[in-house]
Image (cartoon, each protein chain N blue to C red):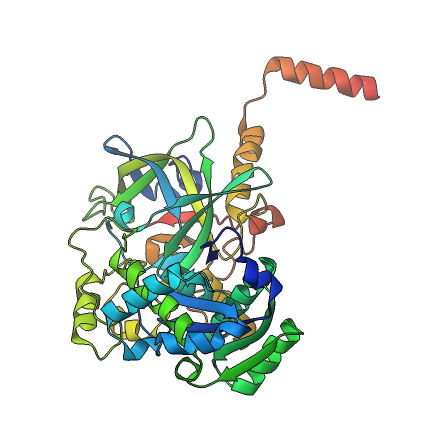
Length: 301
Length: 165
């Protein structure tokens, strides 16, 4: 998923051992993409890098970040990459049958960036990264995946290491731009982008969610449906029950609790159906029908 | 999708009537989702539900992709076989047939029709093994079982039996 930013790696990066920083933007908000960014430079350039004022992106104003991003793009001693994970992929992964949690998605994205940079032929010696979950476990995971690279996993790495501050700017500016230029998949009327920060405490975010909720569809795909922030907005939405959730429940509760929408509630009644017997709609018929879930409808009501 | 005569008609009398004449809207296609949506009525499907082709083809099935309520769905479009049409039926209000003393008859009216159906799986790639495409086998089986046998076919069959003996 990482987007190509440079066709060929800079020459120094294939000859000299390099340092790389990795950071993320938009992990917490209920809407928009989560962006992982990385920035790398030759080990010998690190001291110069420290003078470039790449502070943690959160402490900078938007214009300052934009400016710094433009300056690092034209700096031939620096390389960078981003991985943009769009909100519908985040929702989809977290709502899969076998759910992938946000930490795992984050780890995979960071490892994807390392893989990408290595595949470009860059001599990665050290990687600095803000932690997600337990720092030591994360460090071991990264080291096992990429033996030969020294990983430094730390809390607030973005304020400790200039190379991570740079990565943080790359990630943050990319996410801000993605939101500014967002094109809705949906063609519903009166949608707008006054989203606020995307955090539940932000009145603009609350208002935006209120303005864009739909009783059947929930929200536009800009929203991360798997976020708790969405839950109160689903209270008066139309109830939706999934066949795949049903299978999960059957497996764990031995079929004692079934919530599947009954066909009878949709106006069809089968033959000799006990109210709780809704699992296989071909039940009691020969295999041909069972395999196809074809039920004999005796009564239309 | 099936022809509108209820299966129990012969045995238990008419239990429903279906009026297909006013089918006004031609939807072209209908969607079959792997979930129950507890609402009866219209929804702005084309504004929110945006299927797109993935370019992936599995066993000759073209896989489409769409999102609903945050979940990723993978689907395939099936054309209804020749001679069949799909209808969206609506129950007529006050649907009890007053002329029937049992009061058991429901009346349905066609609101729209469609010629193909896209069925969607949550998380699994559509394949010919899914139950929905396999349902169409029934049409072939039913046809073979119920088609009147011509005198020619009868003659051929008895000729074959004679050969076997």
